[in-house]
Amino acid sequence: MERGKKHSCSACGTLFYDLGKDNPICPNCGQNLPKKKAIKKGSKSYRKTPIDEVTEETQSKVVIGRFRNEIFRNEKEGYLIFAGEVLGKKDELKFSGDIKEFKRGNFFIASGDWVNNKKFGLQFSYKYLGFFASFPLLGIKEFLSGINFEGLGSVTVQKILDEFGEGVFDILNYEPSRLEKIGTLKISQADEIGRQWLKTATDNSFAIFLSDLGLRKNIRSQMETFPKEEILETLFGEPYSLIQKFSGVGFKIADQVALKLGVERSGIPRILAGVKFTLDEASKRDGHCGLPIEKLVQSASNNLNEKEEIIRSVIEEDLTKEILVKENIGDIEVCFLKELHICETALLERIEVLRNQEGLESTKVNIGLSSVEAGLDFSPTGDQIEAIREALESSFSVITGGPGTGKTTIIKGLIAALKAVDLNFSLCAPTGRASKRLAEASGEEAKTIHRLLEYGSKGFKKNAKNLLEDDVIVCDEASMIDVELMQALFNAIGDKTKVILVGDVDQLPPVDPGQPFRDIVNSRSVHVRYLEKNFRQVSGSSIGLAASAFNEGHMPSLGQDSNINDFSMIKANDSKEVLEKLTKLFDKLPKIRDGKFDPKKDVQVLTPMNKRELGTSNLNQLIQNLINP
Image (cartoon, rainbow, N blue to C red; front, side, top):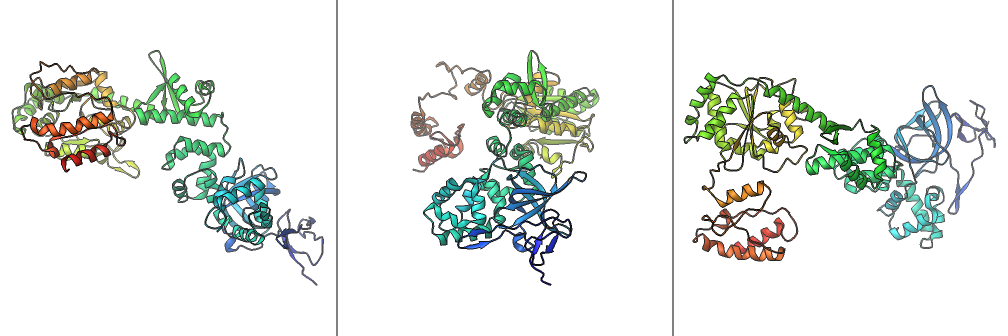
């Protein structure tokens, strides 16, 4: 008996031979197998037939496909088998996985593995499947313009897409000879394009998909290092989380991806993402932990290009409660990012506990103070002794003052006092440079806060469950600490440990969210010692007077009757004039200093920018030419 041709039942997937019959019937379910329609490919004809075996070319882990029809559904188990076509394959394939609701012709992308099912045959078992809002023409354009298709330029590719649109799926899969219609391609070229398409398209489906989203190559390269189903789940489920996960992705790129994948422009997920981004930007750019609700609405409206009424309604209806906390501060309603609000609240609770502990008993304070002078190379002033006394007597204290006011001297005196009464202490600072300076000035080991808290891949080892064992924590340059790092530090400090923060309250706030040092000083809830005398300038120095004026928010008075000429202001109308006057100043300085002038040691130039005429690059070049003409 003739075995005939091998078939796969479209209803149940059973593989069987037709015994030479024209209208074979499935022996398992009795389904009539429809005749396959021949499709011309150039001068040859071929049929779309199922792939019967797993081969190397069927091993792609991501496929772009088109839904044809449902084969099997199990509602109880949530399981679905359906037939579909794949980008770069002539054959109709089966897909299996969680139930999805399809319409005929829906395009999708799926990640998973090829498996052989005993009953239904070869299937693509998908771990994740997402629908295209529109056919990925942009991705296909970039792919066809690439190295796999020699001689096929972007102009010709665009003509192909203009002519066939999403029909290019069928043209490239089944009838590449029709590309000759474009007019710039010969039949031999069209057939070669078809062969290259079938050879490479399936394996490049993931790249086609990512480039269709408009993602730059550096972002796509990062994504390709992750499991593909994880990336697809992120893209379709939480596209705005790309901002946190991948370098180079900002809100605009994430929003572009979200809209491309079908997120509604005025939908709640997009509005929530825009509100969160606005607060994120305010915290990173300006250090704000929250914004007044009207300011938030206005800024989010600009970022989303959406009406303020829509954004306000989402916020006021508590649809943002998972990401925002609203709080009335005076008469103003302020919105905070939830994680920052939790952080600030936890920090306040720790400060409240620490500031209400007892300081050193008077006997130990006196012992400590008697040892201060021995620990210094000179006799401290009365103000410095009092600052040290207050720090010893308090469980939580702050010492603040500008440059040259003796903060480091006081730290050295404190160290001598703490050693005299046998108290264990740690010195720390927020940055490596600051901790190195502190170590050099004090002669003691000083650590960054991260090192003190033993930061690792899983976060800080020192925390509320694994406290620091010191009796005293002395933290220098505390004005540079953001709210999250301050909270992490205080979280690891035990209730009986004394805290001494040292810093300049007039310095610029931290780069990251919050300004806890300034807030602590301004709250007056802990003991604060203000240092005002400057030991680096002589009494009445114009530099000190000018600095104080700037801190108070007004221009310094530069009268002609000043007896000390160590500060001056030179006016200029534009950048060109600034450069001219800077050049003349370099010529004058040796004469002003009676020849005792070393431009490498005696000059420091500060500028608020890197680029343009007055940026660091241009000024460095100018000064270099002046010093070494």
